[in-house]
Length: 279
Image (cartoon, rainbow, N blue to C red; front, side, top):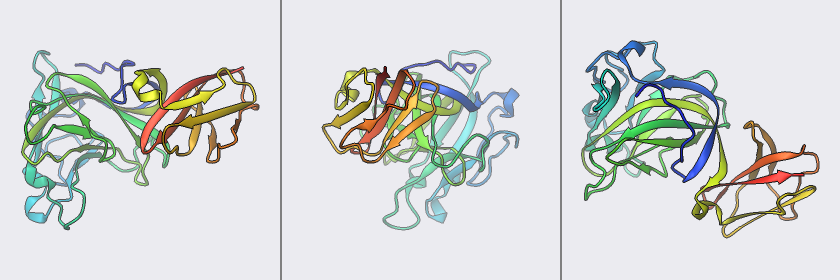
């Protein structure tokens, strides 16, 4: 599949607005990926051209179980002649942390100081993925950009949107989950982009957030069935225009210009968004 980036349903069952692509990768030989290259060990990206954005495949496992027991290789994409994808063969031992009690970490990560990534800003990995291990008894294969809230993969190709917040290292990380056994994941047409979610989508995810009145002119009130985190308001261009930590008495939006906006917050750790109109 050749770099097809469209506005599709995200894994939070809401649409997302792509505001500026920061990086993309189709994992083709023309992009520096030798056919059948292998990540030999942690910290070594094998036969991959150094011009790619990726640093390595990292694991926090014990020295005897490092990520060299897991490998990635360029593969011809089934059903798409002449196109290549990236296949991960994930070894269960790579999920055994070096220090007892630590959270298992196995991730594909970019080089540090990736241009366009800013500490604390919101981004998303948009990637096509699949797994032949989607229905195993031990667990379901999943991917994440934060090592939490893993999005479960299916046995057919599907596009996934994985939000994350910019880190100190200004790098991007794609995490794999621990399902207690070896498994495989295939990815293709990955992009990193600025991420602003909208509220167009499945009502099951957004009905717990109430934004009123709508349209609003002076005060906007936010209510929910659970505990709300800081409320942020974005314009339709993806720019954050307001942030409110105390919204118990409403949010003064009188200074906003007329138009459509997006309220974005988290309710008990889950991202939730809703649109409103300023009149």
